[in-house]
Image 1 (tube, helix red, strand yellow):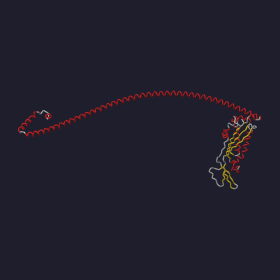
Image 2: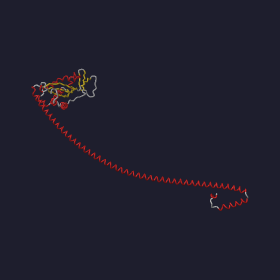
Image 3: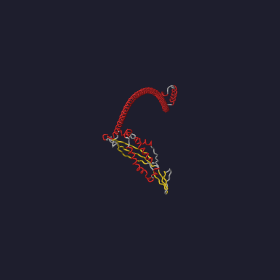
Image 4: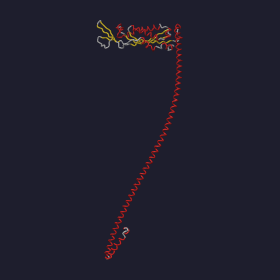
Length: 364
């Protein structure tokens, strides 16, 4: 052990952390955070009262605060010829009451310091007397929680008897020396501690065994859950693969149907395109044929017109030549005998009517 925390040390103080709750259940003071006293003095007459709500201070008023004080005391006591050392920590919250203030009018300005100075020795004496008179075997077997509670209650009762509201939390932490260094006069204490150590170690072994079994059970359950999870994952994977395969097959079927429909549409569009192209070609051919006929007719009309113009020109030339020939012939006839001219003229006039069926051009 030798100034180190052991199983017996931990067991003896295991409930110390909850001591504040235990004390508050049995002793709950009523603190007033804003408690003040008002002192009035006129000559030989004076009065002391708690400051009321809505109080207005006058020049003849003296106001004294009674705050809530936090006070911590710590000490250490050796028991059983140094075999056990107990560390003591006292956490005290206190506030002076009206009666205590009336009994200590001279120290109202520093009343909390007066309380500390007055009761520190009494508190330490209470702690020392309690620890010296500890029943040797009982506290080793039952722990220190009840002793801490009783000690805190005793101190609180001492304060309340003096009209001081308080809340006391007592913490006792024992440590033990190694067994070979102790004196045999404390054999009963040593035996009690050894017995308690054995019981605590047995409890710890049982608890360790229980925890080990619980851990093994948890591991088995965890492994079982892992197996179930793996089986679930495998089943889920198979279902997903089947779903993927079904989706792929459905997609292929839909793609094939789409391809067929697309081919039919493309074939219909191609047929309609060919029909449209043939229609356009027929329209183009008919338009070209009509245009060709129109151009041919225009060309024929132009040729006919040109031919008629040529004929008109030929007729005009013929008429002109004929006129010239007539003029020449007239001149010749003037130079010949008049009779011959008359005879030829008659012959010529008789000859022309006989050949009326012959075209004019041939005669020319």
